[in-house]
Length: 494
Image (cartoon, rainbow, N blue to C red; front, side, top):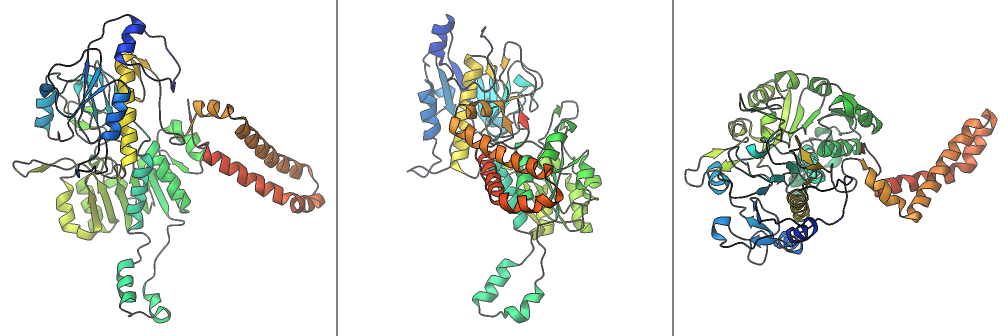
C-alpha cells in the first residue's frame, strides 16, 4: 500500500480496515492477530485475569475480540482485524500447533517464547522491552534482522516497574541489617538499644559503586534510582551514548569489565542480542562470566532482571564459592510441562544453584516487569495500536532490527519522561504558553544571577549573593520542578 510518509510520533488515530478501504480504494481482507499472553493482571468478578480493558480498546478501534483460537471462530467478518485471545499457550509444541502454518497474520506476546517455525506474515509486537522471546523467522527471530514482517516492542511501558523491582532486590540485602531478627527481639522485649546495638553494624548504599550494563529505558531508570540513593553510578553502553550518560551525572565505562571493576552492585539490562543460527546462541548469552565477576568488589550483589542467559551459571557458582558474589537475584522464564512435570527455560540452570546456596540466591519467574495491571493494559493497548498501524498503514513504531520492504519507520514511541527527551515533547510544551513563560522566567532568573555574580568584583560578590540568594534558590527549585514534571531530562530522542 502506497502511503505518504509522516513524521515519527504522529498521534493521529490509526485507520480501521474498513476506513482504509475507503481511503485507498483497495479491497482488504480480514487480518487475524494472536494474543498469547495476559493483557490484564487484576482479577475479574470470576477470579480470572481481567482482559476487559484491552477488549474494549480493540472494539473501539473497530476490531473483533475472540476468546478462542481462529480454528474455532467460524466465519470471520471481512475487512476487520480479529484478535484471538489465547493466553494459556506457553510450550513450543502448543505454539507450533497454533501458529506453525500461518494461521495468524500477526502476534502480540509478552513473556511467551515464539518459536522460529511460527509464521506471522504481517508482524509481531512484544509487550515490554526487548524482543529476545520473539523467535519467529517471519522477522528474522528475536533480533528482527530479516524476514518479511516487522518486529516491534512497547519500550518504556514497564521500565520503571522493572527498575524498582531491581532496587527492591538490592534493598533486601543492602544495607545488610537483619531487620526480621531485630523485629523479633523487639517484639519479645528482649533488646537494649544502648547495650546491644553495636552488635549490628551495617553500611549504607551511599558512596557504593553501582555498575549498570545497558543504557536503555530500564538501565537508565535504574541508574537514576541508584543516583537518588547517593551511589556512584557507572554505566556501560555503546559509545554513542557516552555524552548523554555523562551529562546525566553518571560515569561512562567503555567495556563491561571496566564498568564492573570495583563495583559493589552489578545490574544487567542489555537484552539477549541477535541470534546466531549456526550456534543457536544469542550474542549476549554468557556475557557476565568469570572475567566480569572476578573484578567485582568482594561480597558484591549481582542483579539480573533482564534475561537468564546473560549470566554464565558456572561462573556465578565460582563467584559464590570465592565470596566475590555474596548475593544474586535472577528473574527469568521458567516453563513446566503439564503432562510430564519437566521444567525448562533459561531459569532451569539456576535451580541447582538455589539448592546449594539457598538464601544467597533469589529466583523469580520473570515477573519483575509484570508488577501492576495498568502497565500491562497500557502495553497491550499500545501493542494493538502498533499492529493497526503496521497492518493498515504499513507504518512501524518501535522497530526492532531491519525494516521490511514496503513499510515506513515511524521511530520510537514511549511514555512521556521515559528514555529521554522527545522532539514531540518540546513542540507540545510550546503550545502551552503558561508553561513556556514559567520555564523562560525561571531560566532567565537563574542565568541572570550567575551573570551578575561573574561580572561583580570580589567585594561585591558577598553582598550580591546575600541579597539575591532567595530569588535564585526559588528560581532554581521552580525550574527543577518544571523540568521534572515535563520529563525534560536525559538524552535527546529524535
